[in-house]
Length: 344
Image (cartoon, rainbow, N blue to C red; front, side, top):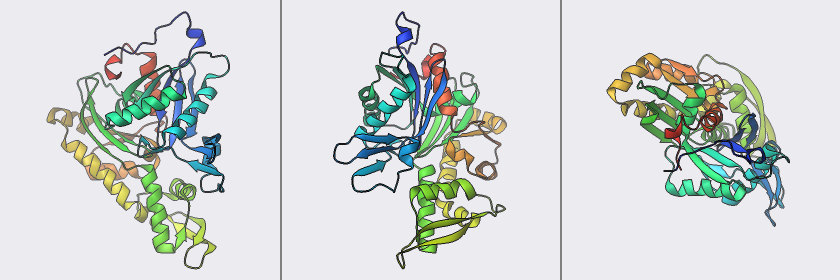
């Protein structure tokens, strides 16, 4: 295996070294010595006829569900994997241009995090998309390890550290010791499935059709898994019983009920991950607890619910949305120390 190296070169002032968290919901890019320079939704808007890019990121996300017959706004990743290679490449190319700026002339070297359960075919798709977008060389690091480094866990110690990363398309559970994953579990359930569950609930119980952006807004504003939360908001959509727009008052209790299935799946996955943990490492987790990362960690009450279900202390990362890319960035900038984490 060739070691990942970011040693200075005579031409380094012309090149860029990037760390990337290519997520289902968001793409974050960290540039060496500059920090996070891109934090945008993983969405691209394209012309249907020519496949030309109209918008990416936040601008493209505002077009979801609002395009006409000539444009299409889409998410090119689903459940943590690339489902539209052309759109992913086009989106990344724009992000690369924004991240590099005009002063850079050479293609960037890239370190990207990938799901721990990713297949060889999916790895090839990630590498191909990055290379077609302009990457000069591509290296990989498992996402749970990157998140653990970003949180600041002592992953090179012989003690067990458990991390649960709830992303847009997947939830990754890993017990880490001596710079490797000792036990793992991964399910393709995350923030997107929560949005879908809210959409289906409102359709079933209120006869109200809403889009993805509205469902996400409901989750972020009044989403909870706690019974003692009682907030509400007006939600507008299409009443499919009579075909006219309607607005209903939705309560936190409705959202909690809607989220029971995806949250239940995440809890079950965490319990299975604990069952796979070697006994010596399990004793460490009793003391150290579990760290939550990813956008799903921001759902109100998720930490308390997991603590109640597992009997373990739960800590939510200080910056759950960015800790993975911060971890990849740290690995990139200290590649010799973290060389065991990197896959060629």
